[in-house]
Length: 331
Ligand SMILES: Nc1nc2c(ncn2[C@@H]2O[C@H](COP(=O)(O)OP(=O)(O)O)[C@@H](O)[C@H]2O)c(=O)[nH]1
Ligand SMILES: [Mg+2]
Image 1: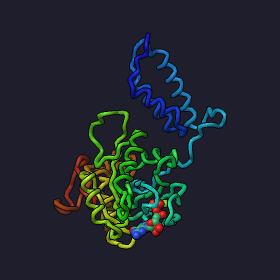
Image 2: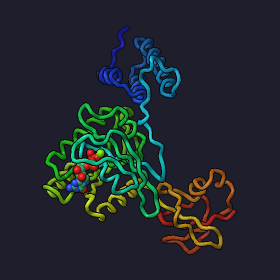
Image 3: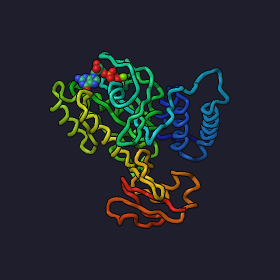
Image 4: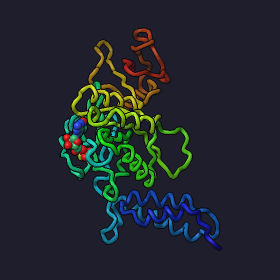
């Protein structure tokens, strides 16, 4: 009985055979199984693919390594620190490392020639007492992109695409980058969709950093970028202007879709230096759970101070918080 596989199966299989990163290979194997038509003619293929997936899973977890091949690259995961992880990606020389250096305590290599950055590097950026992790990466460029890069993009909470608007080929660079990620199953989007239309793709929220503004023919290029990507948040930055760097921080915070809630103990001032960070729309109970996993069951009620509330208003678990609220738990 013929297998009758759809054309995209063969395309995906080609990618699967080429791929050397173990986690990416595992993902592609799962996709291959998912799009395989399920009937008698594919019984054997399905069984083979399930066996492959089991083997790859073992390898990815570090066991069952064969011939020393397909080892997971140590760069394919960076431990998240702070409230969120934001990855800076872009073509060579666009200014990713310079942004990391200007915005965090990290000290990456910076030079006016491409491919200075060989490894990802993380640093912590502070926005109004919120700690956000930034990751600088090697460039995305034809045949030179490190195989672990798509994995890092998948794991990040937000993608900041850094392009150089003092150059003439900004749009080409952005389009190439989009195509590269799409081939790896990632679609950069201005917002993550509520409903996934095609499970083959992972949608990642992204903002565009129009870097090196005030240089070259930047005004014209910025307009072109805005016209080409009308739905995306676009922030013009240069390391030479602190206001633009502050705009970057504010835009990242806003794009993350999170809010800060400050806690206070009864009879004490609020603790402004260490807010609880939770998704917009989060409730009193969510905040309690983030404070400690058992805490949500323990407290009787909470009091809230903030915009549009009575001072010290008494609220229940399901009360929806807003950015900047102060909360006092009563046990
Ligand atoms: N004019 C200008 N040059 C910049 C700016 N940011 C970085 N550069 C320069 O651009 C070059 C590439 O920077 P780098 O951070 O290494 O880019 P990366 O390859 O994307 O990491 C270096 O010569 C930097 O000094 C900026 O805001 N304005
Ligand atoms: Mg660099």
